[in-house]
Length: 235
Image (cartoon, rainbow, N blue to C red; front, side, top):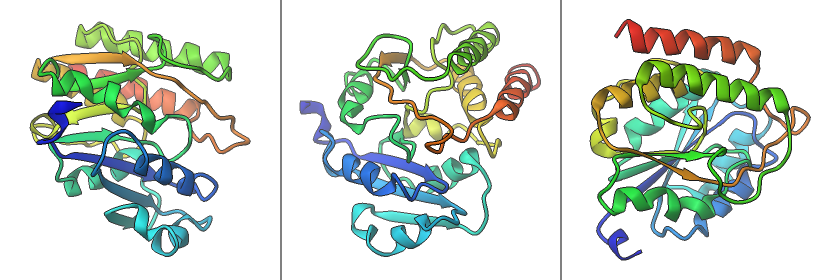
């Protein structure tokens, strides 16, 4: 990717109790096709050994480690990570293994080509393999995306996706208020209001079960509905 040479990339990795996967995801980021990445890990009050691993044996796999003394939520972790990031392009990467860093080149390409300021990686717009998991999660995701689209008037297929990529200029205009998974509809509403070019690219998805550590639940869905109304109608 010729246009990568003069752009700096930051990857922000929020994590909470991911001792089983944190090494593998950080190693995957290191061998991704994008080189010289600034990796910022935000440990959001883990109590399962994640913090100890990050502070010890995994210290060579990132540039910056931010430790929250207690669990504040994904939005709060990303807020801390965004403040630390120094890249021209910032990528959000969950610490589980549902999303594959090998897809970074596809995610950043619309920005590098000057076509986009924000890119969403859609689990519902083609892409690679998809693990078959929860039907009602898929229904919930599509409902929340539709509700968000009604108010933002943009035609996303996957508003709730982890993979979101922003230029620094866009993030500098956004103040994140949500502490948990309400981050997704909040940032979508605020990006849409900026009227910047937004692209979607299809991605693969390796969803995990609750037994494997999936954390999002129905309460987060309710909060997302609240956030859709709050950040589209009252801001």
